[in-house]
Length: 59
Image: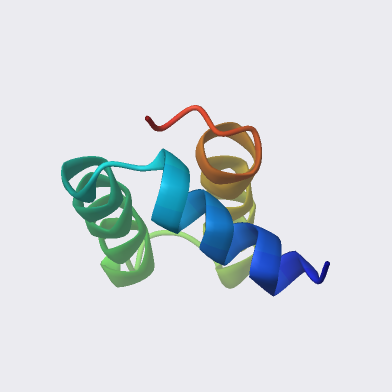
């Protein structure tokens, strides 16, 4: 199973719509903050993915 398929399955089966919206809003805030470098933005988004999506912490 590809990584994209796994992520889609987690979104579809494990995450409530409200939690998905909260996570996407957090990512949008990170991307619109011009005070951080692209590397810092990437690291923050990577942490969100690892902590919430990959590890299925959003239910």
